Image (cartoon, rainbow, N blue to C red; front, side):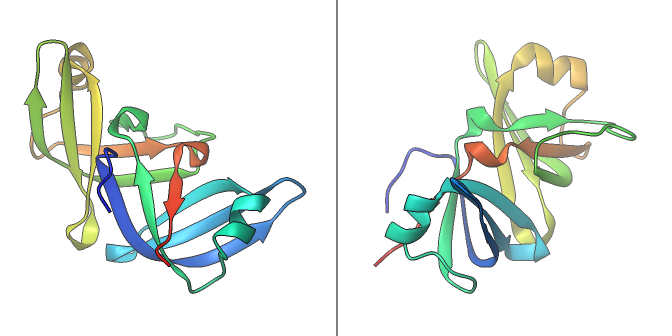
Amino acid sequence: MKISARNVFKGKISHLEIGAVNAEVAVGIAGGGKITAIVTNGSVRSMDLAVGKEVSVLVKASSVLVLVDGGGVRLSARNILAGTVSKVVEGAVDAEVSIALDGGVAVHAVITKDSVKSLGLKPGVPATAVIKSSSVILAVTD
């Protein structure tokens, strides 16, 4: 599969809760992390999603927010992935920030250069990737 999403994680569905319209799908990823997606019930049926099924989790880098020093902050986003900045690549306006998570997994965010500066992002700085569950796409192979 070739796709433009910068973040692609492989994992197995660890929890599936069907609601009236949408379903909450939790996927265990390398290093013991978890990413939760909200998908339609139609997608659950058409993709034959079930606990234990292997899926790919896709997240565009532009959908990833970066948080530093989040002590005491409460967020509505379901996916809070703490790690350490491993790389910052600055462009003319934006920058790509890579955050290393446990298990050798990294999550990538595209944020403004001003945000990189104001947050003090550089390799070695603790940072957290924040992803809303509605920004997560699931894929399966037949």
